[in-house]
Length: 562
Image 1 (cartoon, rainbow, N blue to C red):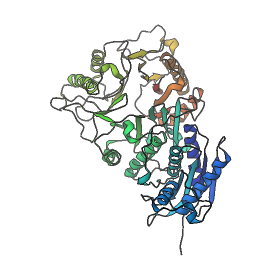
Image 2: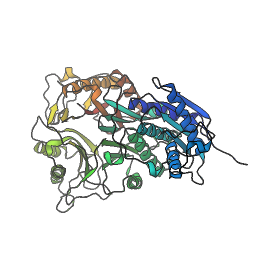
Image 3: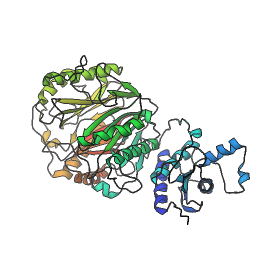
């Protein structure tokens, strides 16, 4: 007895939903179809504005891919190679138009059908260019939990495309995520493109086919990379255009899994910068990835002579005008050894920032944001601030900064990670009567890149007339708890963006520090005040880092201002 498997309505709905989402980002009304192994239609959809003839051709594409067990462009190539025509097959429904893709249970490679590849159906997209139809169809296949069948003969070097978002600034690619995950503190799975700069949310190893997390940690790491690649592809980004990937893991026991997928996706010699952060994650989750990229750029590794990482990653990378560091510590470049004296170690870490920027072809004036990870007892916080001021002496031109208490190994007291923009001069921006106690600005802008330091629900009425000074412990929080603090912080976001020369529409990514993950859905609901369209929001990243005891939430802005 022969049994066969087939795509069903659940898979078809996932594929079409993904197709619609991507088509909106391309700014094209398109049509989509999903068929079973015999070529019979399971579901189809035509967006408003797509001509009826596009729908007819789209159904034919899926029909052809399923019957012929190959993609429509592969069929066209096979016919050319064999000097055949469609008429030789005797089926008037066949077509070789682009965008028809076969779906196989065990996707093989190459063009013609391979032994053991079981066809479970096909998908198609129509209404765009050759590039658009093919890319949308690939994304539809992945949305169902399958891998597209690729033909090495037909893999072109796609050109970078311009995206048109709802506000003509943000373009968003999204993976489906159930509300259950949102309630547990996992942000929406998105990649946000602001013209040529791309930022993602935290991307976990959720199986997009089942919506569940595998029990196997290695499988979660692999799926996290697959999900990240899907989002980047939907944003028109190749792996070589990625400048930084941050890893988030719950504890050090998961470090052995990091390099397996990393080396497969980035075999070398050019790799992005990388930073691994040990933080709490939603229950059952062992990894999240976050990427930053520049369309049209190409990775260029940045090294500091005498320093290196034990893992296979560079000290940093430049892509386009953006430079990202991996972890920079207090190692002496002449020996590679950690400086023993804590004060000297901190000074050396900041000296290494200077060396890093020199290797990138810039200066300290190009640094726009710095994460500072201090040993969790914060014993040497004052020494760090003293070195900070000496490194960035101009009080009107300092990078934005976030300093975190962090469990560092051995005698290590500090790690830093920076983002730099190699174009334009750095300027600082403040919010009246809202300030930091440390000598850091509310935010910094270098060229078109904007970063904030932490923006919390500080009460400007209480802060009026209070002078910011290092060593002050005064925190003027608005009264009313999480909701009141969130609303006030969101008001400050609008003021900050105005002062930085932009608007809320220029925000590409928001890192939100929360006290507990159960607060995330509440914060997202309050964010509707300033981002009413759920399809036009910045990429979010909820992190359960340690906040000041008085605070319930803190926002960190990354924006791209024209």
